[in-house]
Image (cartoon, rainbow, N blue to C red; front, side, top):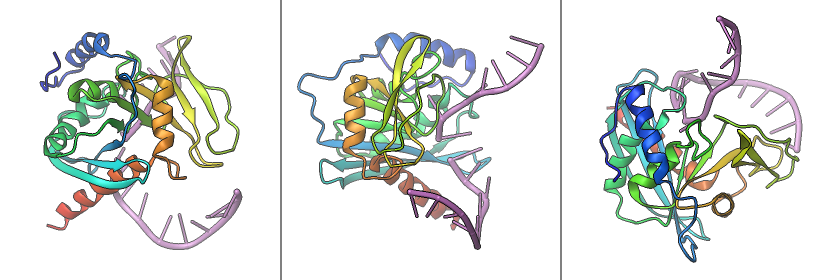
Length: 225
DNA sequence: GCGACAG
DNA sequence: ATCTTGTCGC
């Protein structure tokens, strides 16, 4: 059973990752065809003690915004590579509680199984909310891939320790690719399909862009107060 | 021991 | 992640 009791030390966090990684299911539900896809993101100032989380739900195939929610929460611990989830998920969970809609799929800003212990923020979030989840990161945490062609949708498997853990995929011609990996209740192929389905020709999927815009607006709003 | 290292 | 204007390439 997954709880929202987040550890604060690296030792405890490592133990949680190693315990929960066994719960991850790398297979989508039968007849999986997401209609509502959510983007989740967190924003914060340099040495802030509070952070802003936001979730934006888009409908397919219109990419129209159908729901969104935000939350403010304390920053639990500093950023440590491999432990992003313990820093950002508490705030995201608070925003999730404010969300009325139940999305069919979640796209996180960070890795899924393309992680040192195969348990990135998308895996944790998917388990926590019980919804198919995807990691879509702007840079690599672990793994390597073959060079990509310059064209939109050029792709190459992301391999770590002889294992394909994700896909490097260019969502906009001649622009840096993003790195997609399964979180929970999904496989790599489906994860890539979902990301492409919410791609509108920019570097990042629309879900991520909208969520990013939302949390930045929230952060700046509470600045001018 | 030396780098690498999601956001 | 965030601090930041103009500027270069597609």
